[in-house]
Length: 403
Ligand SMILES: Nc1ncnc2c1ncn2[C@@H]1O[C@H](COP(=O)(O)OP(=O)(O)O)[C@@H](O)[C@H]1O
Ligand SMILES: O=C(OP(=O)(O)O)[C@H](O)COP(=O)(O)O
Image 1 (cartoon, rainbow, N blue to C red):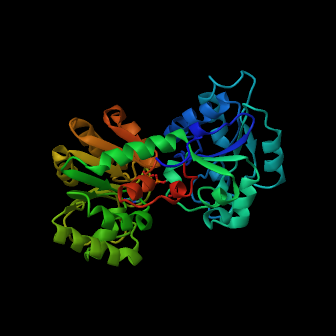
Image 2: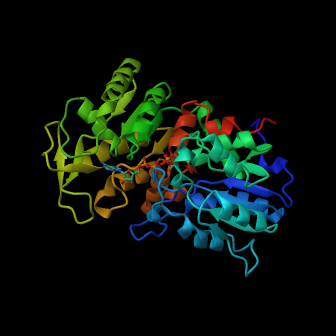
Image 3: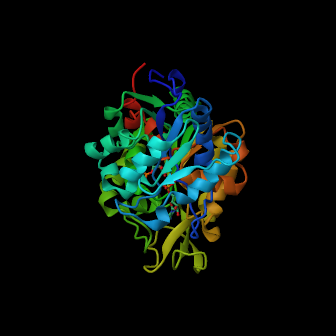
């Protein structure tokens, strides 16, 4: 990588702001259900603390849309972070928390940090200026630090104030250890992928990821679509899908992708059966529904069905490289986790293939399926890894200081 690395810098005594991706899945009660993203950043934080940096951590959680939302506070992350840093911190040392990511309190807490101490800032996205990449807000973040490090690979596809704007107001911007690891691994894995190359896309961020599908069609031999993403495609093909999540303004993109797949002879597999539910909840009434007839109007699809599982598993068994982002259904609720678990197991079974799984919820689901240790690379980025594989320049990387 031709970008400055945290390893190139003298951190001693400096206020080092590390942008991390702590966008972890939370239970309804607000407990962290998968801490992979926090764990994966520990080497960078530890590296800085051991060199006596004054560490300031900045992150987002969820999509609060510029408002303070209690359920999306980063405060619950403090305890987990403290325990994961136990081997580095003094026994009586705590991770400090700033209730706002900018402003006088954040400045005072950052200035008062001693070398080797850590401060976590409240959710950046409680300010609309973060996603708007507002220069004045970026400058406020920059005022907190002497050096900026981006370790948030999972958010590197966003040109936000904390991932892009801030770099214009600090002297040095470097990649963290996790960022370097992800870029190195993903860069090598897909430069010359072993074929057949299969991509599996699911999840709920349809408008973000549907555009990526078009680009992936230039690279892959087969594309398997599950999760909420599937219903925009089925709808675009004329099937009515009840109350399933669809994004009607994306039909044209969906149709174009289907046509491109046909023209390029890329296998494009959509679910052929579904688990339909009367509501979004663990106690929903469910039924299996197959075929192309209209779904009952009052039901929604929350998982792929058994025939689809067979179809997808057969494709995965033949693959030499598999990239997977986005659960096949609402995997955080047990009645709708079967499809995701089955895909995870199919991936684990194909031990000869290079398998790459990315995304906050996908990785959480992978851990729940009990086969995470059989996956070649678990990435902390879903959308970010897809955009990187597609060959796009990630704004959060492009803007770092050149070596
Ligand atoms: N059929 C579906 N209908 C509604 N939501 C779904 C469906 N399938 C998956 N989801 C939701 O998708 C979310 C994960 O999607 P996404 O954020 O794109 O994945 P990742 O975090 O792995 O990148 C989960 O919260 C899950 O409930
Ligand atoms: O969870 C994330 O992305 P992912 O769901 O694609 O893995 C990142 O933290 C980015 O979050 P965003 O998609 O709300 O910008």
